[in-house]
Image (cartoon, rainbow, N blue to C red; front, side, top):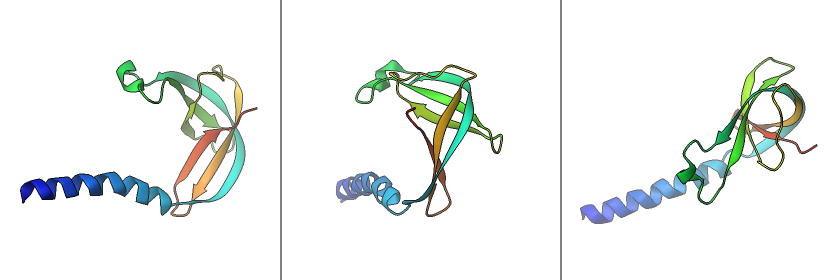
Length: 104
């Protein structure tokens, strides 16, 4: 009986992130610019790169609000610290915002 409950809990835990992403769709986008303040090679543990590979995590200071946001970018298209980069703000249905780099 405990084993069945354990396997059901694992199944629910795997489905919840998928269901949450479907229930919070993107409802608006905005193009903006920011300046790169820092860059980190990710993941910090190379063993966890299996499947996704290496990527950069940029700390970008937005020009309009002076807020610092973190955006992941591809290793093939690096940006140097101090450079202006275009990003897209994605506003989700339930108030969350996410950001992505725009290829220039």
